[in-house]
Length: 494
Image 1: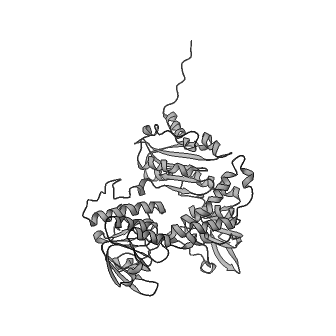
Image 2: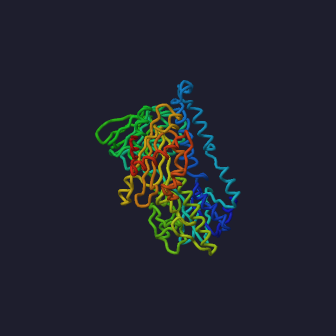
Image 3: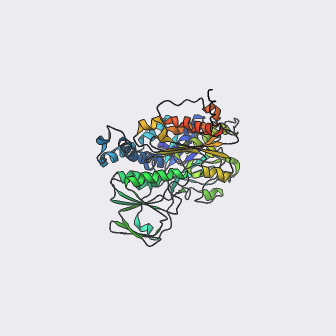
């Protein structure tokens, strides 16, 4: 890899990747491994949103919060963690995890996989062409022999609220990089970013108020009980959650943010965080030069090809294609897309069958996600509502995780719930949701069961270790079995 590519005004590569977040990096890695000359373009930091303003710094903030909450439920340890968090130490750890917002390690990695880097703003400039505006004001023109991959991710979708422009609101970027805890923090939204940042900053010393539009509750895309249990945990931590609340107007007076809600209620805060969804970062990547609309999501097939562009040279991976807005899922797509580009360029067969080597089948049926709150939420596959909406016949099986011996070992007063959705026609797991401390570690087994379409009869032979929380799997299967095969009363002895 070399940044010297910027010295040449015109270059040709087999593959051009726009965006060097984890998704773009994985596309470039796979195409380079296939023997294709590859260049990657990035206007900010290599590693992108996840490394510097989302996944990594947010989890660094949350880890001590969750660890302390769980330690307080362990006999003999409770008194040792009774005091407040060391905020300065937590923020210093966050800075270390984020490599102090430097990307030298990422540059070294690109070097190791023989991918060229051009720093600057990349835009499509017609079929297979990309123009890069470099930081020094120069222009580099690139041509791709085989493929261009757009991996530019998303930005915060801000509402059109009167006064918002003048307030300097927090987005996920400010929420994960702030150098102190604001005294009063208002969070607008009820999704993953909202609940995770509420948990983090409340524990770090802020008084958090959440404004959740409508009455669907928190984490509305998940099973309802997930949002309910997370709301209970946040309230116990001191968060003020207000449903059916929307901001009518907002302005900053000095250091204070003043809000008027739609019902006339007035609020005052030191900062306001908008966690109101995501929008594709495609407004200024030259979509109009290839017949697409700037600012739109990029619809792709299962090999990542943008379906609205002829000849199959334009690909889109990660959040920008709107299939599954999760870093790990975008990296999965990138691996498949990179392999597909390599196969096509090298004249090899492309396996587009379901679960084939070049398709992102899991996007449709087996998307895993963890919400790092107290309690934790882990889910994969369908929810009950999705099954109803799509007409999939499923049977719901619930189990109180607190009844598992491993949960008693894990924490006093453990609260949690596990749910399996069993495909009635196939006898396989169509979805799973777990809520409770430590349940994120149950998710990979659930993902294997869903993606592998493992029959329940075979799952009986996957033995959970005792005493662990994973014994919830056995109890779920027993609940399903007992529902369909009621225990017989043994005959009375004469």
